[in-house]
Length: 311
Length: 304
Image 1 (tube, rainbow over the protein chains, first blue to last red):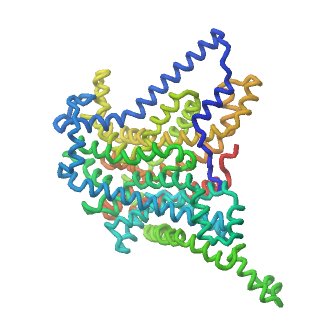
Image 2 (image 1 turned 135 degrees about the vertical axis):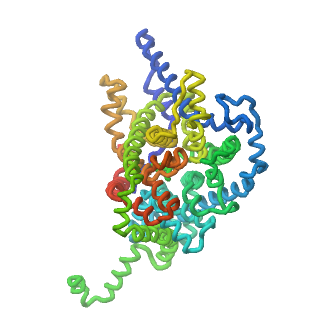
């Protein structure tokens, strides 16, 4: 079950120090200097290409959001009269399509938060039982987790939708939360088990001799020591819920129960789409995950294993 | 069974104990109960929300007549071609670029680190935001791309999303835009895990950049690269968002892939069984992939 926990904590800074230590300053022979100069120029050119490639859609999003309503259909590549009007409209729900924006944003937040909490809870409990208590036949559970991890979520959507209807859970956020947790937990179990290996089992053993119950072991030893992995997986689960569209679209249909992506996508192929408002909404919606990603980036790296994105 | 009971004759107590040990393992009484209680939520969730839908889906798609109806549908036929193209191009171009760029990001310097932080942005931005921006950016009349082409070069850009192959290409490029940063970071991590003394030794022997890559980095990272490629193949096969937001399956339903055609059959045509059948037709590709991946993920890791 060693799913490639490459320890990336040390990422770039280490590369720097490593390379610095292995490449002692070159003797300044002219040919060497010219080669170095050329290599740097090529690197700079590549960096510019990468920046343009990465930022073009993001620039487009910001530019359209800064346009005024009458200005959207124009051939400028910058906003002729930049204004924050569309952001104001979004934040005050000032357009008919944005009527329930805050409600929908709240729904997204609720689904994201619940997905994160439940993924952490179920994932850590399962990994504790599998990895620390070494329950018999645990490998069966590990394998079902691995199997769920490699089944594409979108392939299960139709039967899942019908089953939710028969459970009477249509238009209920908990149906969506169930779907997100189901597809986030396998990865959580894999990573937790892997990370748990670094915590010595003797610790549990001596606590047990002192009379600690398994619940105390879990709460007082396991969870605190797993904190970095919990943060990484928490971020992963939140990003997964925030990226997910299909299940939210199928399971939430009323104006007041749907999430921001579902509300926004309704206008994607309409001729009357208010593009500047839609882009402003898209930016507001993107802010929480981007902020959280950059805040926990170091931790993310620490626990980041393969397949951190799914669906 | 017979031989086991023959051995057990005369020591029924120990047989009972063996059975207990078989189920409980090394755990004693209450501890076993705790371990069971901890694992039950996951098992229950798996049965209700994974196993049951899987079985239900298999049952829904079990009628043979569905498949003759499906294979006769010209839209399904184009979907299969699209899916193969999407997998072949999106996965391989993305992984090769990720491999090369992970080498680029090994360069020292603060500005490389700053660049990496910006470069990761498409992955952190939710797919909805990124893809609807691309959708409007590719608009033939008012899109940013064509405006840019006209302003800079006075070229009239194409109607990117109105023609099948251009739209398919746009979707593939969008997919790469969104997923490339993640795989770059994973392969970067793989490169970082290679012990430096190997390179030092090679340097002493006179190996330089390209030869180091071919003879050291590549063999050491090949295993990881292959696992990533397989994993990415299966994620890309299930990728619904890119096609849905960027092309919407259009023009005229000609850019669907298997992940989106199932939903279209089930909800736009109100034929859920046909939708499940479309998804199930991916099984001949999916099952071998899943088997290989399960083996690789269980045993092989970045073994450097």
